Image 1: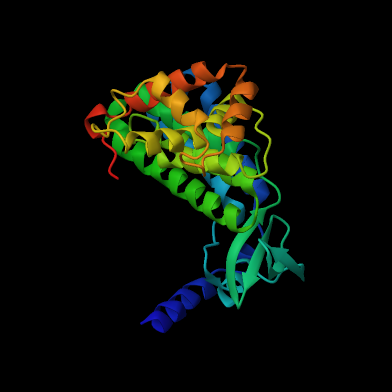
Image 2: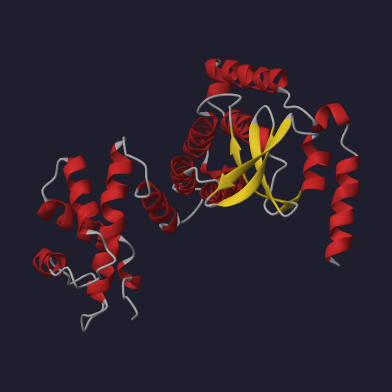
Length: 305
């Protein structure tokens, strides 16, 4: 069955014209973006949800186009059918083990044992295109909530793309890119049309920011500070009779923080550094983090040991 699916996929890819498969059509994509910009500048079109939905689509396409045909694991034969031959290949070390880098104008694909396991995008067609797409879908919902179904489809597409980018960025050792991708996925899910955003995406982003990246933006600093802290709070809560964050207080957290033997895997140094980056004292960070955790679905706040 697996071999049949692979052959079917290969046959489908063979139908792609060689010229189309081997390069990104930057000019055509930029032309669509320019048309969208012109539509937004038109007062009549600007007031229509359809205009903003289309803007979300074309800006998403601009963000995703360079790596749209990639997935992991992907047979290298399919990669060549999809995007053509690389400009060059070279042996590299990827997360401590050897891999082959397939170099293309817009990205580098990393191969192990005949399969693409990750990739790194080298350039964008339009900087900030994914954020613009999310903003467009949010505007469309603001103008016409009845279009929620179409808007949600677009946001799901963005969230899925960004989540995959986060996953492969970890494998490629591009931790900042991965963190930004997970944040983008979460941002897409925050639109009311989407439904409920998955807080795990914030956890993934926060963790990657603690690896070897110096946080710059306020959200990055918050994630850096709270990633380890929420783990410490969770460990403390499972020891309580209620197993609930709703009756957890700062004074209890201070005691657990000072006890280095408790939840020793939660780095106190990272938490302290995060508070310093934010310009907050530790008690303020503790209080804000507990309050934030309490605000998340109080009916589902019980921690299981």
